[in-house]
Length: 163
Length: 203
Image (cartoon, chains in turn green, purple):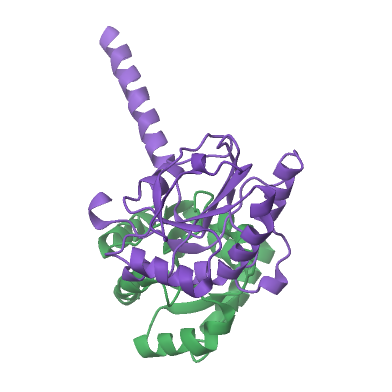
């Protein structure tokens, strides 16, 4: 328990110190578990996407809107890129800069999807876009394996907040 | 009382139907349906017409998806290795051309020619087959035995980005098991892939 808290604190600090997104933090599957099943009372909105994924890019503005409108609430959007590693510098970073994304962007530095897809949701087949809205302390979770509308997203977040 | 029973029965069937619809598609052990789809050479292809096959490596894939592209050479190699042993690759593109023009039939023909696909590359224009199988992403593999029983569902291997760093060849291991008359060691795996581009009106 204490270890999880420390891990959470450490990663939160590590990630927040990189704000501004000059660099994109590389995360491991353990971080997904920490967000998913830690003791945090924050609502995490974990979106799995890639720069070349058209439906993912189409829904990005909704996540940006959520980040802006819920800035004062315990809600954190994390855009988890599943781009190829070789594309991080040449595609992902320029994309994030060009779009001027305000939500946190991280790169999932894992090689074996079969090992971590179930950590997010056992019902996830692996198609992107996919989004998990989770509030660990309240044991609230809602998973979507599809492109979302802003209404879907906000509804899930409001439900999470009202738990 | 009678009404209550009827109602609860109705409810039971409705929820069972809802569950079934939701989980849609085949699980390992189910018998898959055959189909009659147009190949890039203009001919219609059915599994039942592949007389020499001892099984079928059905792969839902497409032109545009970077994961599919990353696996093209590996799919070619798989076909070259296993078609002669009775397990040909049957590639099916389920994407709607209006949602993703890069996956039109003409573009499939072009890609097949560019890469010299040695396997059939079929167009599931109505998306009926992808729905029946329960494919959700590209690439998405369904390995069938001679009786069309589904023996493996999932990914080709455990590393889409670096073919040289692959540790576990899920699909190849499954085919080898079938060839040896053994149980498939790992019957289901997952991978990240591009969502199938469903026609706007049908979903």
